[in-house]
Image 1 (cartoon, rainbow, N blue to C red):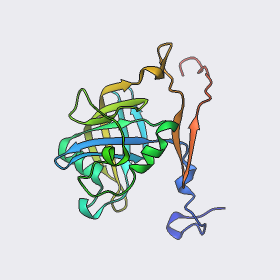
Image 2: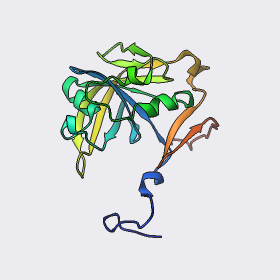
Image 3: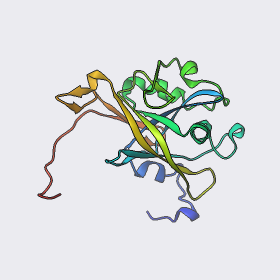
Image 4: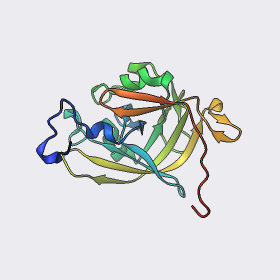
Length: 199
């Protein structure tokens, strides 16, 4: 099969949504003048080591937030955000926070999620997350298409749940990933691979 995206794919569901997978989930928490917010994003990754940096994309809008959603609206307001990682145990709570609640309605409260305070920024984080990355906004990059934005942040603080550290390495019991459509996966099996010299 071959198709040009501008011509359509002719399938019941868009295959592009599932081709680049598995993808980590950025469960992004923010705080703004309307209160605290928490929402998942599946276009997310780390992009640099020194200083540590990451990006995630926001790709839709809500009527009460203009050209975007609550997360980006509050990042524009404060310049900070926290990316919480997810696990299988948190999947129901994570999914619940994708509901389009009204601006100012706290997803932590609505989904019954425990909240903790960040250390380097004025922002909440998910207390039970395997890891949380406190970030300062570097830039918001408009992407092609309506309501598509890439959010680039510098990591200023890292929280790791104690049970996710083994022999000095980050090793959570599992990692929840997005596969596209309504499909998710948990990753538990790992292996090591040596690089060639200089690689």
